[in-house]
Length: 492
Ligand code: ADP
Image (tube, rainbow, N blue to C red; front, side, top):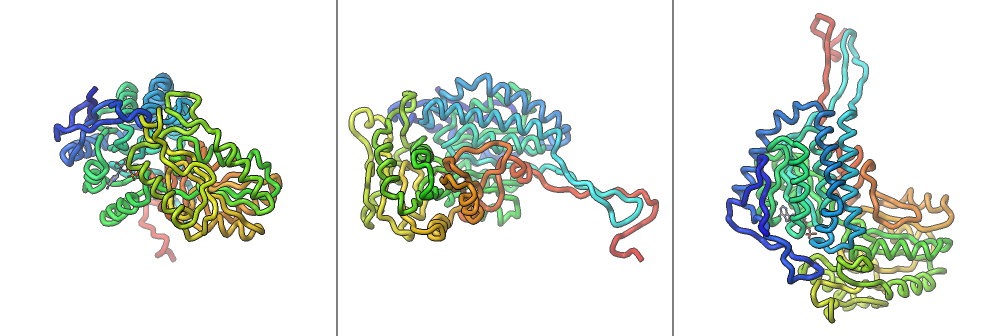
């Protein structure tokens, strides 16, 4: 089936006349659909539609905008089953994980809708008499939202709904691996009664449609989630135009296992953090730092649990480790592990592409535990985005902390211990934007900010108050009722 872009309230084909195929990673012979391979002309049309719609949408009272967003949330909830199935098929995660993805989108719609009745600014005193002073949030303008494939519904919703409630208009360029989820979200927006041009969808490749969108001179803000490489590039584009760029990028997320931890809990936390959805999360666990007195015991438990994880397609609810999104990503995972092996890493389990029998239909990599790693190794430092975890030993807590922080990323981190006070003392000193005690390194709630330090982002946050901050500018208002000309610096 052939799908379309959504520009100015109409589903339309690309001006390029070209399409690309969307494949099922659990069964690469299955083409899910053809999607428009958008070009500069499509982007121009989408941006001018967004620009045109801005005056009307930004003048619509925020609570009214919220009503439409609330309805969109309800419609997403009504279509949750269908959207989850699409995500399971095109992204390749099991239905339960896809359900979570859609629920997160619904939650963000409801959170943003409620925000329409807040969008709080500050009221304060003026330094002059007969004068009021306050601040209010105003929209930024036309926002380019560029999203990844690993959480196709949530990734769009986490940008779209906060952007809309703040009064912006948007052009969404979703990942080329998960275009159908985006299509369904736009069907919902249309049904919810979002005025034409307020949200536009341009499908296509990052280097064509994405690049054209980011470079468009009438885009006022770029919000991106994806690789650090592309994010840095977009940051440069934004800097040259002096526009706001919000980046949510990779991670090299560590788990600190203290000697007194509940080891079974810690192992479960690492398994789910590292191997569910095949580790394809920016918040996936990729480094485990274990205190030496429990290191052997922890490793034994981790390896034996990992060995029995069921690897299989997304449409089998009993699969735990599902496929990698595409061949390119599979090659990248494999390359990282091969390089690690060559530099001395020991593979305790996994370490291979799976091609036998049913696995030949998709892109599968065995869940992998590596040891004998040094801090400077690439596998300790760079994001793999696959089911691969390295386990490293530490002696005292100072050394453990040093290892936790020995990365240029700083997205999420977790500490497992039964001694909460000691755990919190570690958390105080861990460099990460999101930290957990006795929990895996992923799992975020929509009303709390999400994002990281270092290579993980550029100090902006998604979700919660962070998302509202990104998608609004401040306007400071002085109301003078003195009937004179006053100035706080020139007063006597
Ligand atoms: P991944 O490697 O995980 O797919 P990317 O950073 O390549 O992550 O992609 C994330 C999003 O950024 C996708 O929607 C992709 O199409 C888009 N993208 C990739 N390259 C560019 C680019 N040069 N300009 C704008 N968007 C891009």
